[in-house]
Length: 78
Figure 1 (tube, rainbow, N blue to C red):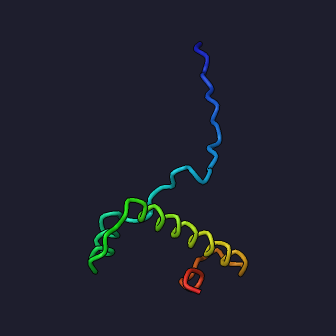
Figure 2 (figure 1 turned 45 degrees about the vertical axis):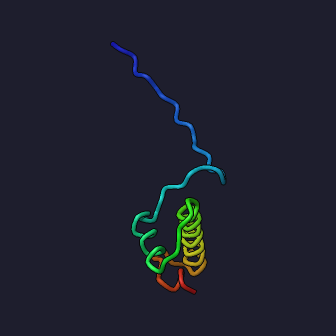
């Protein structure tokens, strides 16, 4: 009978330098920014993505503080 192999799973630690999954559609975001004649630097999408992650985090905190599990538009906009 063959022995089963066990693999150890290591926790991934997140740091400020680790890449976050992109939540924005890059080409559409760039097109929206360029539509008014502006240039877009290479770091712009990363900065905007970080801001979206921050917005999501703030909305989650506000929702939890209000005893809800459903995030509402005013959790993000207010």
